[in-house]
Amino acid sequence: MDVSTFNELLKMVTPYLQKQNTRMRNCITAEERLTVTLRFLATGRSYECLKFSYGISPQSLGRIIPETCAVIFNVLKNNFFKFPTSEREWLDIGKMFDERWQFPNCGGAIDGKHIRITCPADTGALYYNYKNFYCVVLMAIVNANYEFIFADVGKNGRNSDGGVFEYTSFWRMLTNDGLHIPEREDNVEKMNYVFLADDAFPAHEHILKRFSQDESVSNVMNERYNSRHSRARNVVENAFGIINSRFRVLNSPMNIKVENVNKVVLAICALHNYLCRQSKFYLSPQTVDSIDKRTGEIRHTAEWRYEENVPQLVELQNVNRGRPPLLPRENRDRYVSYFSNKGRKVTLAKLKKSSI
Image (cartoon, rainbow, N blue to C red; front, side, top):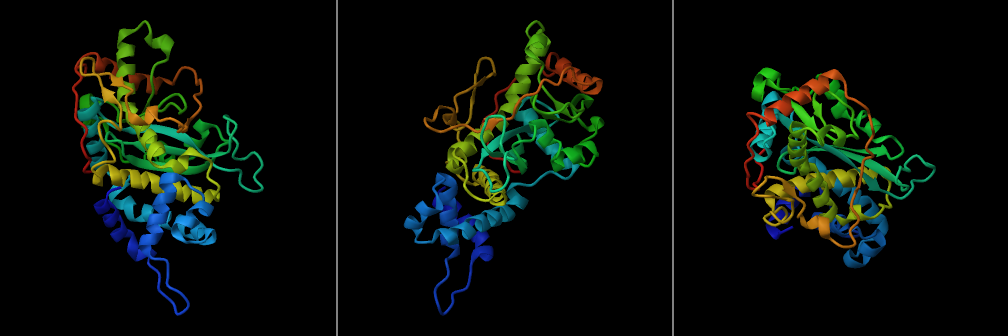
């Protein structure tokens, strides 16, 4: 984070972090609170280790860091982590996906990761997941510019990954028609407005998934659809890869209370969006996967993929849900037809900052 970006963030959080001096001692300043929190997020160092660098006791750090993370999220969420609430905002996101990834009517790419934690006291195997470690689950939706527009964190790792998604506020709004997404008449080729997901997620008329290998290997149109789906959904894979690379606190189990883990993860997602837009160095062509100029296919060249001794976030477990229901199949078939006809052409868009 460069100096100007830090100072801008400090200016936003200071009214909520600054304390008063007393006759007994001077307070820990807002700048110190923000600095030690950012160091914790960037390095994952323990409170015991940080006390030597900042002269703040571990007990105080245990209060300061979660508090500062909550403030960071609250001051950034309205301008840098805003969930769309109107048809116009969803249409703007769909336009970005169409321009950058040639996937029209797309509201975002959905994915989830397991965030490592130490076993909370008196919880037994409640947070123990299928990969044999303790975790909470982060569910997120990412726009065409690698920015998070929705995040839900805190569900225990013992739940099935698809079940976790069905407990999120996004799923409730989607199934109850509360998202205010555009109607077909307002969309490209009058197709459904959709979100891109993989087999860990349930079938739905507004959720598009790939064809299985058996369905695509002998069908050119299905294979072309899979390629376009993977190309657009690559944004969420890169977003998770970037935060895991830049915020090393995610690399090892967090030895803090679960409610504080939630504050840390939400602050990371908000800071990621803030830095994507405000920092000159955070997001670059080397930070994300590149595109083959001849074929338009994604090439896995992002720096975060090749970092040594950096464990990647664990993916959700794919579930064989069988043949999807009729309505999701019909919606997907419309996109299959579109990508083999009017929408067949692929263009290469440069990486650019988002204004949404």
